[in-house]
Image (cartoon, rainbow, N blue to C red; front, side, top):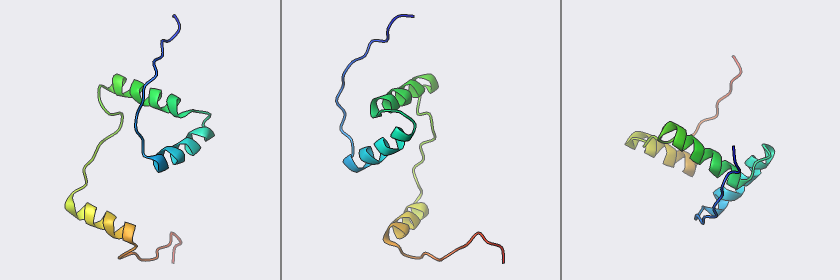
Length: 81
């Protein structure tokens, strides 16, 4: 098998997400380029996204917004009573 041909491309990323992702990827010894190549390889193999894409319904959207605002939260524990 010959050398893999590579091409440079420019993509626009959310700066905060990129920095957080880079920190996670470093723990695996991967670069951002490695991760993008892995993702694109999986897209090709799966002939689509390699994970489910879900659009939240209105109730879920409302709950997510409330959580982001810190509203309607209650303390919970995993300890048995």
